[in-house]
Length: 234
Image (cartoon, rainbow, N blue to C red):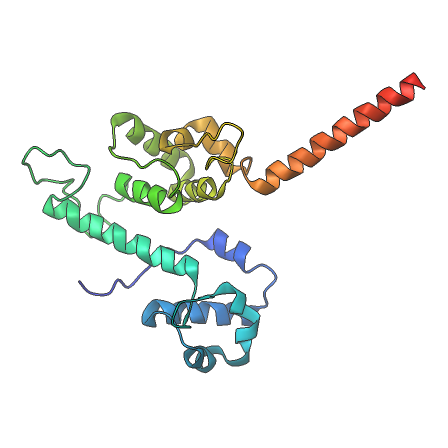
């Protein structure tokens, strides 16, 4: 299989991740992302030849592997997700899709590799693969039933695929949704895609920062109430 010429790029994530960087630093960052995409993990010499002294300004965007080469973790994830997507398309064509009925038929979903065909069709498998990749601590999806297809159709129709992936990412990063709560409860795929839950996650209401700020506000309200009660008694 030939090298994939593309990967998904999320403008909002990029803008948030480069906020405060100069145009020159952003250019250097993009240059290294393209270098990694084309040539893999990078040596210090490769980086020096590409962006020179600007490396010290963008170095925190990259990690080192066991061989001392540098790479951007997010780009690595997106490349991997894209490869999984292409493999799933291939499996559809060959009838090897893991979610298809095991009754001897090899029709798959009859999809093609051309991304401009069936443009309006929801790619259920891609959403599930993103869920597994971004929410590794939550229960795996074993089957795609009508209820789950309905949730995916509605959420993608309302918010678009990019927002759905963003919500899955936020759910995977939420300590509360991953079991760090007083009941050790964990969310699952259906729970995340239910309308009220989806909006709460999208608005950041399960983020640690949001919960910490909420706790501070509640503590402040409690302190204010105690002070008011004390003043009345005195």
